[in-house]
Length: 333
Image (cartoon, rainbow, N blue to C red; front, side):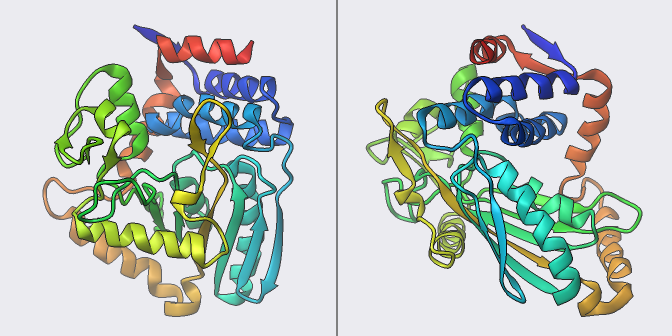
């Protein structure tokens, strides 16, 4: 059993929870919009499920609920966003406002976003840019959850990487995937709902393979594809950590009196104006590839399922587990 909510009700509940726990209007609005978009796309591990984490981060002082991110163009093709220690959604919005005019002028722009509290999916970084005809990539460090290839102790974050490509008369092609075999939120939901996870997701605290989500959360997650996924996780650590003067995943944890939790960290967005590379034909060339992919039975384009889900949730609303709904009512006060 659960609670059926419209998307407007999801937004109002998420925003009320943030306002009640130390967030101002601008940050509450940005978090609620990000959470609502995840619920709209049936990305449950980054929807209302994340509100207690965001609210707890602000209430504990890990994140600043009154943050005012600032974007500075430090070189023709470089933008630095100071997140001011706040929840990431407002800083990402600030980054987009600076990236779009800069990439139109320059052709390619890289933006660092430092000092943010990031709990959301990564597609919100690239999809709005792709909708503006801009090719975009983003990556972000996370808490120390994933063992390096051959190792048994957490070191890397789940370290997602996202990519967005504009399309002709269609929603953009977007993928957002963790370098871990499974997103941490999905493991946490499996733990909450009492079911196992696939083999290869993680190991227990003794380094032994397990499908028990609780044992994995106490042990370590594994990268997808063994050393290949671990190499990508390392790449993200370097791009979204060392390159921008941010923290590595193993440096992001803080203790606010009730055990370690995720602290502030960084990410990178790279945006390209494709018209400056291949001219006006880039959209047609992209569609040629997509047509080839879709000509094979059983295929679909990245992000297609999320776009289809939007039609369902806008009409039918979303189902929220009763336990989560009750905890959100408590947060809202």
